Image 1: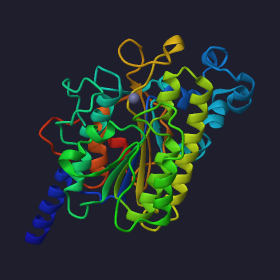
Image 2: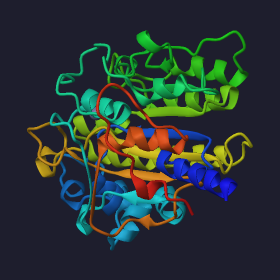
Image 3: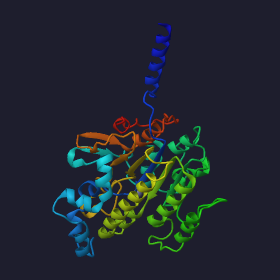
Length: 363
Ligand SMILES: [Zn+2]
């Protein structure tokens, strides 16, 4: 009886602490798509912008690539990996035509506040600009970096330079590689050296502070292969830049090429024994953007910019595919979801949104 009572108490303690189910996830990779709309992910190319000569210059070619009779065909043409693999083996939240919503908690609807909400799990009204100011709030990446077995095993690669301030590498010393910076280290692989060199040969279409995503991706993949980080963040920026330019055909191309990079990443992860079958992939945005003539912008002057999404695929996440039931998730829930996937409870000084339970409920 005594042993039984002890066992029962231990079990109760495990349940209370949330450690009843050991997770298979050993690593988490989060990809952020700057200002990419839920509309294109779930509905494919938007005819209102595709037919508009102002936004789509080479419409014949763009039509050929991304238009089709049905929504299902259109979204598969635009993001074939997402709709063949993530839709089959993961979860996609945010199709508002089905009443499934993901929204920002912050009321600003632009880049720094959006990313800050993702990584700190908190809407701080004081985070109200894109200025290069060190984020005072603790983020889940530095929290994980302090846990046993994770020191030096977290890193971020971003196309946009402000990400270094959003994650506050000055405070936590985490590797945050941004526009214009080479990866440093005593033993770089040939792939890392080449990725470093190539980023300076590519054009800077948007000038200072923003590099092309393919450069960020090449640097990221070379780093994954060399260092095997356990919490890794890739921050893509092309989509937002082409949208601000008002170039809908290039925005669609960027979506299509982003999908290809995600495919390439997933195929690599499933080949490397360090990551295979024990890595959860999360895809989200920092904000949405407006509709019709307001699609080029975001922020409070562009209604719907608070509308985002959450895509997850990994060994602890049931393959529900596109979630078709009504529901509401907020961006401030992502940080705790990341911590829980890795077996931790994120406990900073500020309040944190609770984890998205349906992501964590196993197969
Ligand atoms: Zn943004």
